[in-house]
Amino acid sequence: MATMVGFDPSDQDNNDHQKAKYLPGEKYEFKGKSYRYILVEDANLAVGDVVMPAAVDNYTVTNDYTGGNAIALIGVGVATSIITDGQYGFVQVEGVVDAKVHTDTAAGDPMIGPNATDGTAEVMAAGEEHLVFAFALEADDTGVAAIRLQIGG
Image 1: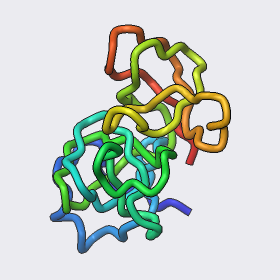
Image 2 (image 1 turned 90 degrees about the horizontal axis):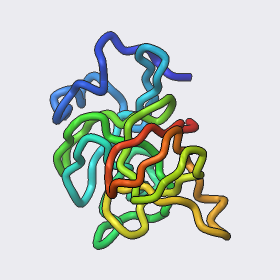
Image 3 (image 1 turned 180 degrees about the vertical axis):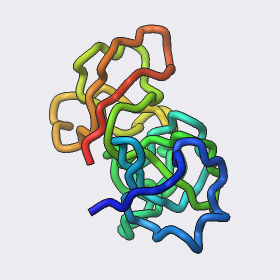
């Protein structure tokens, strides 16, 4: 069960000062969207970065596919604020959110976590059905850019 928060988690850059107040791995809700309080590993997060698990603890995440500690290609959330490596913050885990995706994403495409460019969701290929974490709600054919994804919790 998620707990309500009294501020917008998507507007909290570098949330380490909140560490004493929130529990890592817990879900929090704000205005119909759900967020998870996480610890960033390996790289800084930018707004729109898709994150993957970096440990089995349910809260350590990374956007770093190319040289980081990602342990699965499944996306587990999207950064809605800047969070630096080694800091705590919130990623959105349910609801509609802007996220980085690769060129030629079509509306309705099933999306998986980064497997080519750090922080960027990819369109699912055959045999990757088990890695789907979201669906594109609109097309993007201009390169790595933000589009809207529906993230399941």
